[in-house]
Amino acid sequence: MHRRLPRSLFRALVACVPVMGLVVAVGPAAGASTAGAHPAAAARAAAVARAELRRLVIGQHATNHRVPGHENLSQDQSTNWSGYADVDETYTAVTGNWTEPSVSCTSQESLAAFWVGIDGFSSSSVEQDGTLVECYRSAAYYYTWWEMYPTNDIQVVGESLKAGDSISASVVKSGSSYTLKVTDSTHSANSFTTTQTCSSCADSSAEWIAEAPSGSSGVYPLSDFHSWTETGATVTSGSTHGVISTFPDVEITMVDSSGNVKAQPGPLNSSGNGFTVTWERST
Image (cartoon, rainbow, N blue to C red):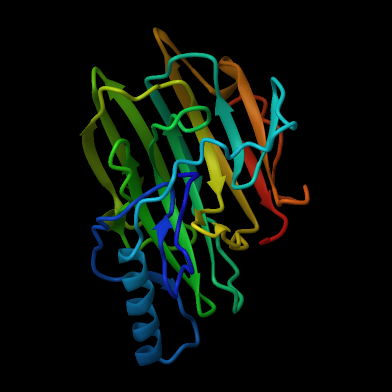
């Protein structure tokens, strides 16, 4: 994801949660946190949130998500990404696991996405999947999704996702086919597997990212997810199957236009296959 998302998110969205476009395949119930809300009011809010997701349209690839002048071999800054990317190789598989964070929503409408993928760090092609949290009218709505170049349409699959769910995600390439898979072992209705085709994808990076989606007017507020911990990450390049630290990796810190940190990744764990991103600010 790392491209454009809604435009006024819940008023007049025009963009995409990753770089997604549209053709949102939505399921039945939204996984919203609406504790204390009147059932009818909660249902109406959920319906509006789902309707807004359906209005997402294709945006520009954020191949310029990096902050000029702040990149080096092992660290980088981004206006909408926080996490790690493996670079300088050709990648054919990436996996990751996490427990869906509990988001604190305020009256501010905001978004946060968590995903694994191939490409996007230095290319316009993207093959990604994961989870998305949408804060709308102080309620949190959780979804699973995937996105695939060249159509770059966000495909929302699961709407019963909740904070605390156990998630695993992967993107695996074989020839010109990419198998994208997300498993919610807590609420299986959110799980999916899809195989898509791309003959021109770069395969030049692998990522594990917490993202602030963006729209035509820029990056949208980042929902307060407190912290997101990626575990058990694996990646494959050629005949080598390893972890994040096996290949040249870049630690990416999300900052605003003034350089203030919005989401800070911690160091890789001792196994080189996991880390934690800590939320700092929404804008």
